[in-house]
View 1 (tube, rainbow, N blue to C red):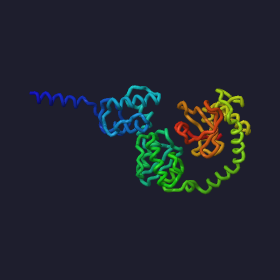
View 2: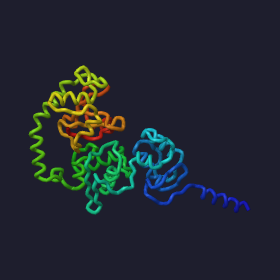
View 3: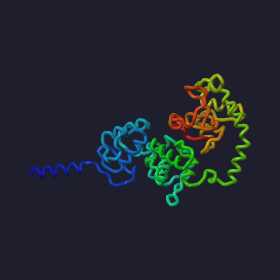
View 4: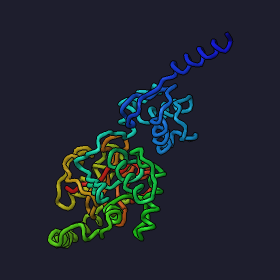
Length: 320
């Protein structure tokens, strides 16, 4: 009789345990108590963001996973409930769409073509497909769609093996190496000629703009400032451009909207950052990975795009 009762209890507990049918991560809600392969992928995604530090190989959604989810939700500024649904998946950059208008990946010939530079902090389908392309070449960087430390190290390892600049940033040089082509061969000779002409004709004005910008190094930061008594970031850019006879919008968001986006900044382009989850800071690119800007804690100064803080908030570059 005891054996029968124990069998019934065991069967009941198995039926009570939440289970999910096989599906791709993001197809179904995950919560505490669930045991499923998707939980392993979820833990991997959370580990890439730095919010999960336990064994990521188990498929059980326990207390530690719920706590990690809540920490991630809090950091992402979304509803904190410990349940992984559409909102949390979007914040993690999880998408089930295999196609992207801005991204081309061909598994048949193993090529990859992106329109944007990817670096630490990036997330979304482009990151996921970069991770897949690297994994296909023996450099596992996860598959979470989040450009975390693991992906950055994978990119570095690939770059080192390819004999190119090792900076952990996926740009044209890295994409060309993945595709087995040189960066220069990816564009036609006519476009290269046109680009060279443009750079040559504009180099003089851009050097003047950089000199003008550098002349204000040390000017203090003043919120809303547009004069040499004190600048905010967009006020500084507007002032310097005006000195060169070029008009610009007043705010960073307006500059971002008006600028023609470029994948690789040239001297004189504006670089944008999402300090508050939107285009909220900007500077003038001066070459060699550096930009000059009016920082709230530094005043007008020169910083490096590849530094940890600026790299994690970098949105891209634009040309006015």
